[in-house]
Every structure is written in structure tokens, then in C-alpha cells.
Image 1 (cartoon, rainbow, N blue to C red):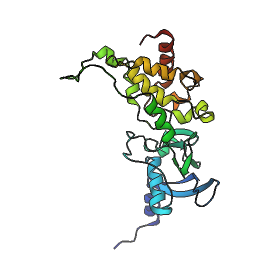
Image 2 (image 1 turned 90 degrees about the vertical axis):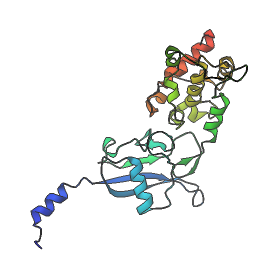
Image 3 (image 1 turned 30 degrees about the horizontal axis):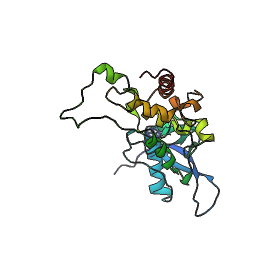
Image 4 (image 1 turned 180 degrees about the horizontal axis):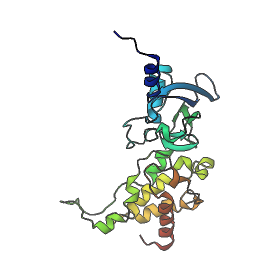
Length: 252
């Protein structure tokens, strides 16, 4: 068998798609310490891989105690929202090459919610706000014998807010929510919007009454953090403003 030349070995090495990346992860384990700390992990990874792939590599090959949520890994379930390089993102949609892999990639839990362990936060306050805005179709009368028809124009009215995947990226990017967890937050308002402007629904006034209180839409300071953070491209701030307008005019 011929021995490969040094030039060939170097050429193959230079052709490798892998680069060395440092993941700087905020770790927290209440069973070990009451304080969080940062821990660095160096790994070889293809820059076209996602941050979620890097986290998997760390957990499966370097430290099995690393804890984070993920499910579908395709930007649909919303489970893996976290702060990556200081911005709320889905780890499964964030490519290594797009976030400056030449510097340490910082990964930490989303803000405004209590941390259980490492990158996992307590989502119950978030879902409680979601439940309170009645995120379901409300109608009266007998159960229909066929589907409720709706025009394309009426459907278009709330099309944008149907895209929410409840990842909490928008709510946990909101400075008002950081300072006061009683605020419903952008995601709950977005999901209320989805039904307030649905022509088939009959509970718009009830939802507006809920959102018109002291913890509702008037707490919004229009910083656009929520719109910037949404991985689905929802115009969150616009939806909040439309709910405010509906509260004033009672037209929806």
C-alpha cells in the first residue's frame, strides 16, 4: 500500500469541513450551587450545523449532565428557545456559521422566567398568561353539522398571528416582562389577537376586557424587542397595537 505524501495529508486536512468552536454555556444546578456559572466546551463541528447540533454533541460526548429542552428540532415545537450570543433564538434554526464562530458562542436560558437547571426555565407563568386570554374559538348555538366557512379576506385578517409556536422568545425578550412577571406578555396578546379578529369567534369583547386591565396591552412600551425576537417573523408589535386600537374603538 502506498504511503500518503505529506502534501496529500495536508490537502485533505485543509479540505475538512470542520472547525473548532467554543461554546460558552451558562450552567446552573440548584442541587450543587445556588449560583450560576459559565463553562466552556471546545468541539469540532461543521459550521453549517446548528447550535442545537453543538449542544447535542456536548451532551452526548463531553458532558451528559448538560440540560436543555428540544423536541422536533425543525422550528415547529418552540421547545429550544434560548439566548444565543445575547439574542433570543431557536437553537434548531441558528446555524453556527451565522453567529461568529471565531469567537465563543454564548448560550444561556431565556430571561424573565425562573431557571430550573442549565437552559431549562419554568414555563408555567408563560402558559398561565396564555390560558387566561382564552386561546380557543368561542361560539354560541348548536354544534354545527358542517365546517364554519370563512372568506379568504376574513382569514387574512389574523393570518400572521396564527404562526405562533409558543416558544416564549418574544415574551422573554420584553423588558416590561423582565421587571414585572404579571404582565401578560407579547405571546399571550398575539394569541388573543388571533381570535379577537377571527370573524367566526364571539368572545372578542371578553378577551379585550381581560387585556384592558393593568397587566394587559397598555403595559407595552413598543420597543419592538418582541418582533425582532420572533423566529416565525410575526409582526408582534403591530398585533399589540391592533389590540390597543380595538380596545379604544371596539371595532374588530
